[in-house]
Length: 154
Image (cartoon, rainbow, N blue to C red; front, side, top):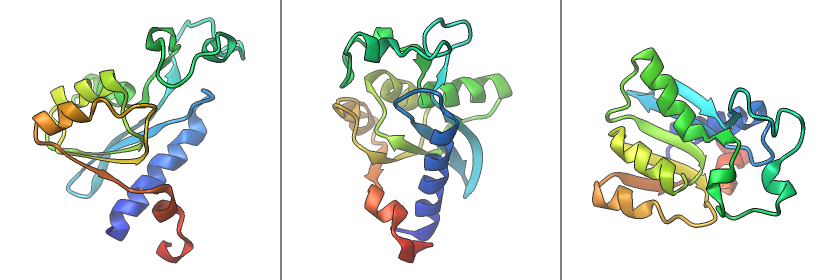
């Protein structure tokens, strides 16, 4: 794996520290070797959960991608797409670096945004969105956590 790609995934990992969610995800978009946008999962403004320190998913015992409608955060990928739309940044052809494989809904949104390639570090509960990338001939590559944090790659 190319050192620049590893550094970009590390940068995505560092975005996780900004999230107040228990399940932290960082995501960035890159064009021509330059980061054009970055995001992390965030509580939606006005949401009563999370901001009060209560995680509805933990409270209800939900995990593994179940009952995604009870997620009080905006996923990092959706936040990235929304930011780009608001700022007039085109994601067409961009490489996306995401710390976790996108969920089913985020996978569809990234494909519709016209991304060029997806790099991810960890698997999601199910990588069932893979079929959308395959159907659109969008390359997907995993950069393992071990590779990202190997000290020899500094």
